[in-house]
Length: 262
Image (cartoon, rainbow, N blue to C red; front, top):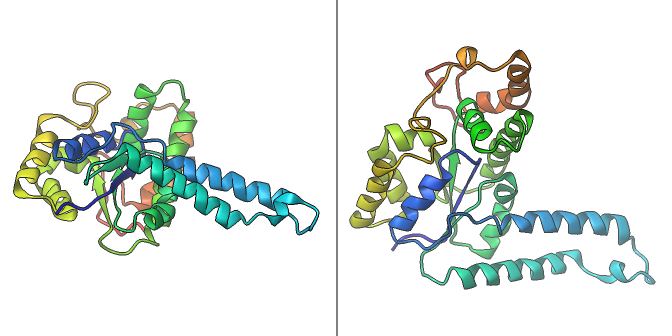
């Protein structure tokens, strides 16, 4: 029986949409975009901040009598109730590509003890190139910082996860090693042979979402990408440490070598 629920996380423009489409075609219920559950992290952060400022022990202050953990627990139950009501099928997934969703994983595991996670990743160079084209409303610095934030958040959360509840999928593998990565995903999700075929066919028939034809497969050399001196410095400022942690190169070869990003 397929495992569920499945949470697809990772930086935007890293193959999250391709994974969501493949799961949908394989029999899972889910939306093209989630973006609801990251609110758990945001709400609880504001609760912690408010109580730290306003709930000093005092018998005459109402908020000081409220248990913040009990409050957060009840709010989490509301998120679970709403999520399950909108995903009534036996097998469902959620795709939310941002760091807040990654940071919510410890809470999600409490709410759904059988939940599993697919982390979609992509080298920072190609990710930022794609982001700038797809989301021109944000500046270059934002895209660099946000990619690094997602990658760092995953490395941090990953240390808390037991083996068997997560799988990392690089976007380039979806394109260049389609059959192998499809098999890994199918084994991870415990899919049937028929579902594996549908998964593989989805990856074969359509590239991960492209900003222009062929852009998903294209890799770049850092020295020849055409960024200004300022942009190159900004990229290295925010992204160099995460590029190194994940074993990504700055050349056309994409990855230096396989490493454990911990």
